[in-house]
Image (cartoon, one colour):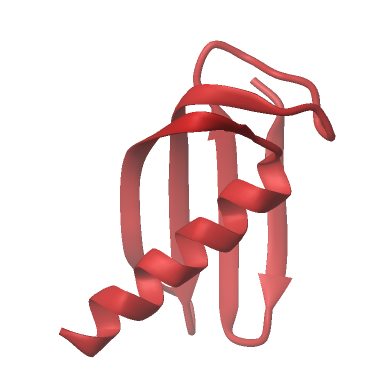
Length: 72
């Protein structure tokens, strides 16, 4: 698997394409995501995209999901 990790403020977002993938290319299907905020894991899940996305695009989605979970 090609792991993509980015830091955005207090977030650390890690994305892996299940089954492998090349960074910068678009894939649909399952993605393993982990979002940490201030060193605490706030989201650790597998999401499925129906349209092809890059690792970066999925990391943006993961951050949005984590933000939404904080608001509940």
